[in-house]
Structure formats: structure tokens, C-alpha cells
Image (cartoon, rainbow, N blue to C red; front, side, top):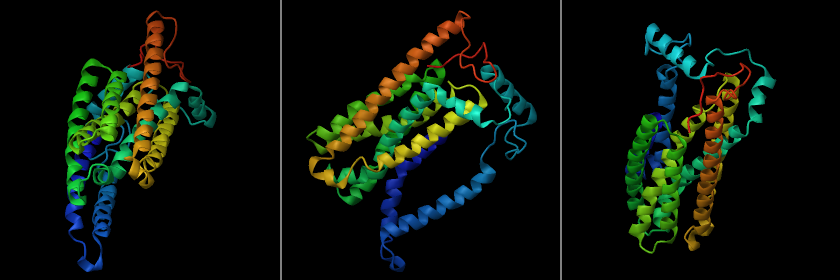
Length: 314
């Protein structure tokens, strides 16, 4: 829900930017400066308010504006305990924390998230530029045309989340979203009509943005142990940040004459790598779950020895 709201908000960012650009000349400031000032001020204000508004973990001593009663908190903690068996946080040890990096799946999750954020940031940074330089729209039109693809992405994100939750699947959701990207990217880069290329933008925007919560849940559902989870979360967020850096370099100004083809190929490569990694993870999960069902192994056994009831979600 959190990322869905952010995606829907992105649908209006272009329209808001277009409106703020009309302030150009006021107080001697250009339009782009007004965008940074007003949107930056709103971000800072909401960030400060978030200290009091964000909900903490149910067993935290810091209660978040009475969001849950004590009975409800106990119920949530008990549900997590029965699902993963790792609600108790053991004392921190650096060796225990770093041991999480010995699992290849931790790095697979990180690379999946890197690929996903590279795609989503590349669009977030340069979609208006692509609409102008690659499709021939004006600057004003481009800022407004950013909205529909992100609104469509919000619909796809909600639909895939519903399917994933109802049928307890994670990997197929990521594969479906990457399939949208693999269909949309060639359309964006090689279709002759600007309208058809814009249709490709819908597919890529939906697939890339829908995969961010899908990739995060793929990781969160398949990790046990508090300190392994901490290490895995750190690598996931870190590689997501690297994806933001890579995304800023995907569609370069010097590639404008080629229709930004190198950037298209880079995005296709990220999509294909994600497909390969998800398939490898799902095959490993399936094999491990079968062994766990036969009592041959404990899935995700860590410092606490593992839980006989835990199974991978793939």
C-alpha cells in the first residue's frame, strides 16, 4: 500500500511540475527552482511528521499513536512467531551479522532489487526527456503525459499484489512484471509511431514499478533470523541505492541521436538477469521445501537452529 500510494502520487508529479513551471519569473526565480523549493519544502515537512506518524513494530515499547491495542499487538507478534519463529532478537554479534552474507540467495535478492531500481529510476529521471527527445512531444505535453503510465502502474501493482497474496506466490509476480518490461522496451525503442512508443512506456513503467514491492516481499518472505534479515535488508537497500545511481546513467544525452538505444539494451539486460535469478531462486525454494516436507532438512536454519514449520514462498 505504501509504495502503491507513492506510485499513484508519481502520476501527478508531472502535472504538478507543469503547474509549478508556470511560476517561472516570480521573485526572479526560474520554474525549475520553484519545483525544487516547493516540493523540497513539502518533503521536509512530511519527513519530520513521519517521526510521529510511522508505525513501529508491534512489540516495540514506542507505541505509535495507539495504532494497535495490546491484544492486537500480541496477536501480530504471535502470528509472526508461528510463521517464522524468529521474533526474539538475539544479542548483536558482528560475526553473526556478517554470516548472513554466506547465503547466495541474499545476493540474488540484492541483484534483483538492483535491476528493478535501475529500471524504475531510469524512467523516473528521464521519462519526460524520452517523451521529448525520442517521441517528439513538447515539454509541456511530456510533463502531463508522465501521469497516465504511472496511474496504470498503480493498477497493475494492486492487481499483482492481490494475486500474490491470494495464491501465495512471489516469483511468478516478478516474472510477469519483467515480461511487461521485455515487451515494452522494444516497443519504446524501435516502434516507428510515437503513439505506439508511448504505449510501450505504459508497459515498462507498470512492470518496473510494480516489481519494487514484489521484490521486497520476495526477500522478506524467504529470510529467517533477525541478524540475517538485517544483513539482507541492508544489502537490498544498498543495491537499490546503486540502482538509483545506475538509473541516472542509462539514458544519456549523447545517445539521443540513436533513439537512446544503448539505454534500452541496458534495461533489457537488467530484465533478463532478473528473470534468470528469480527462476534459480524458485527452483532452489521448491527443492528445499520438498526436503523440509520429508523431514530431511530445516529451511533457513540460522543461529537459532531453524523452524520445522517454515517454508519458502515462491
